[in-house]
Image (cartoon, rainbow over all chains, first blue to last red):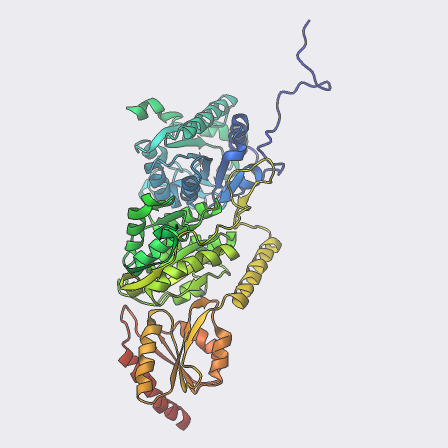
Length: 258
Length: 365
């Protein structure tokens, strides 16, 4: 009987990419950030582009992203990650540049920068983490909070008359000619994580070909902010977020060509 | 044989355009900005001439975006500049504070207009406090240069880049709408005379032989944040010791010392001559760097002169630095115009002539 290769009595099925630092992540149990960080860094390692990649961290829960991602990074002011990324990419056009932002950063305070960066077709990857809440500041309403959602600044549930509707900024982005690839993912199952990784890989491939802006929204769990267990948050995500923010491609390269 | 671009040229240009041309010659690698009167010629000139140069020129969607593009490009090691006026400079303040804290060099040009608010497009010096005392949040300083001619609009671009890069700190050219718009003859410096500094800290991609570079202004532990602040303060003290610049005219026998910067210093020079024709002994001190301020020299002069007259196109902003330097050694008077009004030499002369009477009144009390 043939046995699989064994090292010191154990089979190596999983290892941390060297594109992640040794710093322990501060994220809460069940939070999606750690998973997104990991797959993003796995792709950078697998493509062998660590020495040509510059990331931009936001303000929000992932403000310390540069402590975990073992690439050159800049820490932007709240909302301005895509403007900072624009500045980097314009002077270093042969490098891979990505921005990483949450919903408050990208879709509230940074809306103008987001729209105009994509409208110019900046040749970067924008990663957008949507968990419908402000985690870092303690669970306030986000532009993407769903109607009826209770947060510390919508204690009776988000009311559209008072606070408007959930902003589907990724749908807006997909309308812009500068956007090359726009897609929405989640990280609540292993299969979803695999699909996200594929999308990140494709985005860097497109960036190499100077195709324009690639924009990936990731629906992410926030068990602490949503005040539920990680397992409950997976169910809540599927039942409440997916109907408003359906997963899948919003703009694919073939559509862009038309 | 050197081409014409490699030696100085005598040109007749608008201040804003001279500044833009000087930026190319000083090796500008990226400009991001947003149009606003009275400085829009800067971006217009750069856009038109950009094809001749290896330089990024981009019109941003706002001044907020522009300063953050500047942040990114500077962090990536490029020689960068932006320009704006009053309201636009106000919008940039958060980004400027981040750049000072992240120790990123850049040149920011403020072609001042009358404020507050939307104000007017006429010249002013109302942004002195904002430029020299911080402007944004936290304890930081800009290196501030105040040109008084189209020649200096060009020359100070070189000085601004040199100082910003030497100290890894944002530098500002604080000028005004009149200097931006007026045409004068100038000797344009040659291209390629300003070498690029080493930027081992820049985010250019983590090579295998070095640790990753991180550009940040976030230091959560108060002990570390204080350490960063102490380093910045040490740097500002060094700048104060090393980089003070000023010009003085006929101060040796002066009874009245005029103190003025930028355009107003030229008006004061004319007023000084008018006063001397009348037998009044008047001298002029023109601070060229507003931070660092020539406090030491002003302190020395204040113990020799009878009184000081500060003249500004604002409600008395540099006046506070003058008083801090003079420390009561002689009376300090002020003449100001605001809201886009430029004082005439005759008005300044009147203010000079009013001084003895004023002093007399003060002695009677």
